[in-house]
Image 1 (cartoon, chains in turn brown, yellow):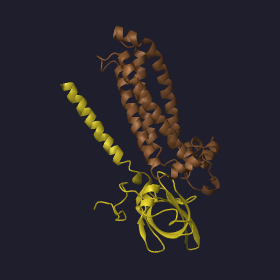
Image 2: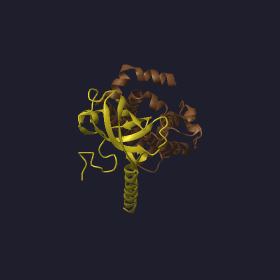
Image 3: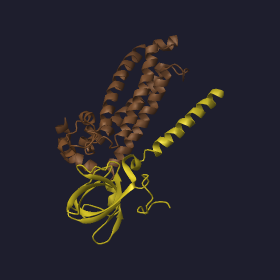
Image 4: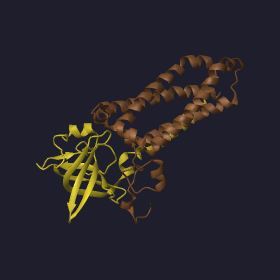
Amino acid sequence: MLDIAKWLATTEWSIALHESLYLYPWIESSHVLFICFFFGTLLFVDLRLTGKVFTNLSISEMNKGILPLTIIGFCLMTLTGLLLFYAIPVRNYQNIFFRIKILLIIIAGLNALFFHRRMSKEAKKWDKDSSIPKSMKVSAIASLFTWSLVIISGRLIAYNWFDCDRQPQSEWINFLTSCVVDYQLYEGIDGI
Amino acid sequence: MKKTLKIIAISFTLLLGMNTFISAHHAFTAEFDPNAPINITGKVVKVEWINPHAWVHVEVKEAGKTTVWMVEGGTPNTLIRNGINKKTITPGTVIVVRGYQSKGKLCLPRCIANGRDITFPDGRKVFMGSSGTGAPRDGSDPRERR
């Protein structure tokens, strides 16, 4: 994996991106904008499914109106995110917050899969009975929670507290970030 | 009505909380020590033109000992606007850098610092950081509000 990241970093486009004067800041800013777009619309869907707010809005109606926007937001957010990764592949790959974020995205993604499978099948029924199963409410809250954590860990990628070029770090941090460290340099120093 | 007020009050408190979170998160104090100013003179060995922060590697020879300093600058865009570019700063250029050292001071394998300004061999002094990062107001940033 590290070799793939290293190879990506040598590609022409990756260099052009991280050296760029305008493109990188533009991509970075639009990533944040699309996160707002995605999370803002997701907020409506998830809050509606808790059954506490927007109760006069039918779930099937909401699926038609808001959900496509959430999906558009998700695609644009992911695209810009991939470009940001591609601009600085090695550092991102070895960044502990990036790794936490990917893990959280997998969790949030599995939750979303469960959520939408059931919602697309049963939304009409919930509207008719005007009740939402408890598992869906839990899933909606879990969705808000995990996506919030994704955003927070994404923000933290910027900080170099656990970066490989910032040693000494404890052995398990270096293990979690797959840093290659020359331990001979730090012999006899506390905290390693 | 009461409920609405409650929601407004809660959102407002959250917003205020967010605000302190954000101001505490300006990159400077998270990573660098405002009480450890540096003033180093040395030869540029490498410049990494990387967003969101460029890095200038400077080799400092002092009392027979060679230390490499990795100095963080602003974005490539801010540096180029200030006159620091691939032509003006090349490996071999001798520069004076003022800035602040990182919180970790082991300097292994190299020292890390946040750069404030660079003085070129011709005496030209240029701001190399980003404005509004929460770095000490030391007068090196010409756009700084006094």
